Length: 382
Image 1 (cartoon, rainbow, N blue to C red):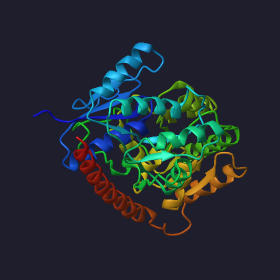
Image 2 (cartoon, one colour):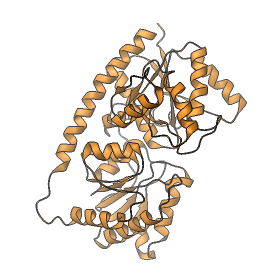
Image 3 (tube, one colour):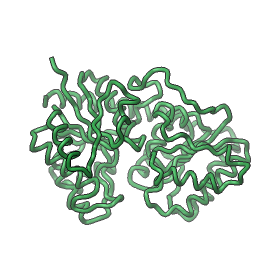
Image 4 (cartoon, rainbow, N blue to C red):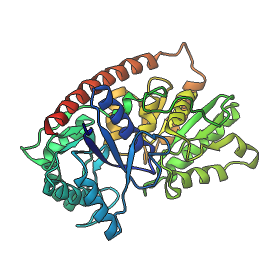
């Protein structure tokens, strides 16, 4: 008997957070007993199949007419289309009638509806929308889902606002909370080639056209202070593109005195996700702008969060994290005081990590129940 074919429409390829959500979701569905063939969209050939040989990938070519023909054929080959995860409903990276994430979703969902394919979501993010066009287009997109899951209370509230009374999102959490370096989706025996013998702190930033001058000055001061304490600094790119944090990290490196640069290392952008988890959890502490860097580290190392959008604000609130805003005038002083307290606690440190691990386990149990329910809904529609 043919296995059902499940497509996952996401943005895997350049961003490790999107990869974490996709592969965690596959693992959760398999543990829920769903025996299916999974095909995951990617912008980069080999992004899935190199690391996960038992998964299929479909390479998106959005700018090519032939790419759209292939996409239609891919949709018709599916039994069910799962959309997500990540911040799917957002306009901060730009939007027009035909360009942007919301218009792309609108076009793909229209094809899937015409093909009579069930459309369900993984737990997705619904950001506060900044444009009238984004708000106008979000409602029809949200109403096309047969079953909508969201990853945080803010997303649930936003989905109801944009989608109207017909929207009843199911509140779950981000699937990446279920990932560990030993998760069954990873190939056994993978190891990092990086030497991490010396104690180090980890930093995960993001550019995304944000005004970062004040923040980068604070990060530069932190790096120099940590290096003077004898630690190494590991800059962890969750996005592999040069025009995002890789460029920021290179600027930070070049701003250091030459004798310090060898102790401030950029993790190789092609480092497998399994090794990135090990790196994040092995740090003395993590300073994070990237949501999924923080999610993967929580409960294993102290995390200082730099807030920039709905998703990071929700994480800060949910875990009670120390934080500052990306444009806060006191970000340098706030970050410096926190890092000093981590490296030189004035008294016996409070064990915040055990509480975070408990909360993480609660989220994992929530995910297992939610994905068991999702697996049931998929079976009902096959």
